Length: 282
Picture (tube, rainbow, N blue to C red):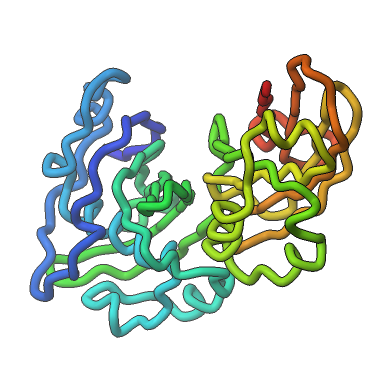
């Protein structure tokens, strides 16, 4: 039966993405009919072990590609049709220190035209101890036999989280200048500087200060950052660290009332599903 309907699965653990792919034969399950997956309910827990082995291997392959692996020898026994690797953009980062902890599948399909194999559409989440996360989308189309898998097409892209997380810091301007911020080379270096220089909001409100926002979730490229402070536009300078932007804005002394900081990231004008907003009160 052709599996031409999209199915929705919850996130499941991705243990296989954290270990080496064993050599030898791949299992060759029959292509399951759509009904096998239709029975997965929206509130069900996705059991990775219940997925066909070729699906698990394909997810793991997508995970390694999302981490920037481009050496086909390290992906064996999976192979790639000519031009597939060349179609992938050079990675900005290999996500050092990150582990793949969750995956989600939005579709398991059979390719059009009667080709043998499957096409998967899903997302992978990578996390690190510092609190950062990356939600990476993938589409992978492949054929497989009892002892091999060949990837025919693959695409990777960063997914906008539904509610991106930001970490807010206040630094007196007497402690740092824009020139100091421009010297920062990595997200981790910027975070170390913040922990050494930041003060409590109550102290920052008494003097000129930097308002610094760290993105904890990786954001899609091409977006623009906008910020408002107490309803007024605030000019921000953004430094992008491989998809995790850090925003620097300036604020003068303020009264004792509550201040409201709004931040929006995304294209202009805002696009549903591609923009996200956050508000802070301090």
